[in-house]
Length: 263
Ligand code: GLU
Image 1 (spheres, rainbow, N blue to C red):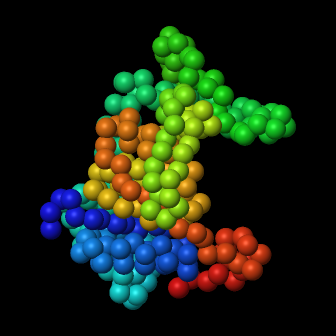
Image 2: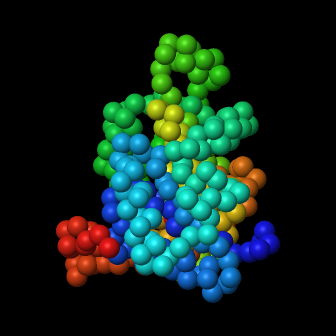
């Protein structure tokens, strides 16, 4: 198999049993890989240690195998881009956090949850879309030093370039355009040091050589952020396709409320 072969992936967070929506996403990815004689990769997105459990990792692998959705790269099969569990990739992420910070493409943010919540409420009340106002983007190096020396904990925020447009051709929905002015600087490393979803998910797709990302429509607005990150890191950008969600009779995405069960 050469390096440019098509590669899809399924990237569940092991915080519950797989349900119909997850399986449908996995199925489309597995079928696309199979049709193109490509690879289907499995990655466990377990950065949220509190919500993830080993029991769900075991269960989801059993469910996938039971449905004959076998992966050619991932846990238990392994491959050259492993490890395939994000909890084991901390050192990989660390290098890129440092690089982004050194190049001033990311900055430490000391804002507390309460402060962020206050700003959010104010923006909503003024009829604006909630967005990080850039408070810590304007701190001088001395101010940052001072806060760190005083023991304040910081998250790391990605500096979104202003006044550009991110465009991509969605495999399902066609041409997409997003103005970066509508995207606030977003957190890529949480205060506890763990990577945020936007970051680890996009970085791993690139490092694992994923060429096609098929995922739920609920991720569509995450994609321009992830493209910006990959551009900043000089990494390859996969093709994205966002598929409609399975909804209940009330039009809301299928959930426990509708009796959505595990497979
Ligand atoms: N872990 C994410 C989820 O389960 C993956 C999203 C994606 O496919 O990019 O929602």
